[in-house]
Image 1 (tube, one colour):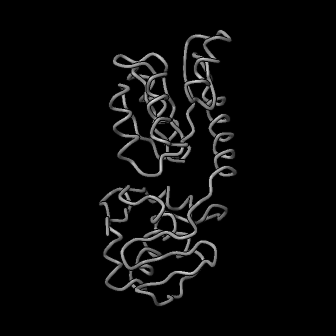
Image 2: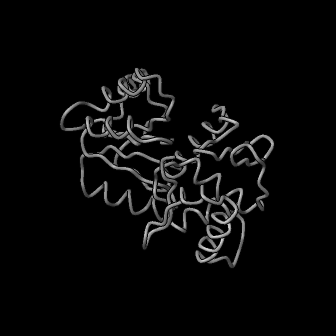
Length: 224
């Protein structure tokens, strides 16, 4: 999942980033509420905000209210050291979807993220078509067109392109792409991603330049 962590404790931020990225999540971080709001507003595809209640500028409650005021339905998991019924009710009323009391075990955080992910997958109505310049991917028909003409992609190429289209402008590591396009495969190395990006670029012709290589990291889909 694509996550935004808004937490003012730098040690906890570093720990959460490491553990979450080891679980193959894409992680953005902010240490103030206002910075977190800027990232939430500017970044496409964030699925869950992990939000500390006690921030140095504005409270987590205010951050949650402002996110909801924009009409965003992103899941919000609120972190707090307070555990009274009143605190939980206040957080939920401010727009939080779940509540986790500090200190917490990472395993519980991970479980709650999985639950929020399942809930979001059920509630969201994904756009049936993903578009980048002349490329249109129709998820319903599993058909890709280039300048209005259908191009023939293998299931793996389709999955790889779908992942890139879902995260425009974001750098995805080879491991993250591998996890998306080869979720149940064994004995597949990150080098397979490079090979399939090459195949995909060839089939996309001049539009293949939209898939940019980020040296030493992976790939990203450039703005069309």
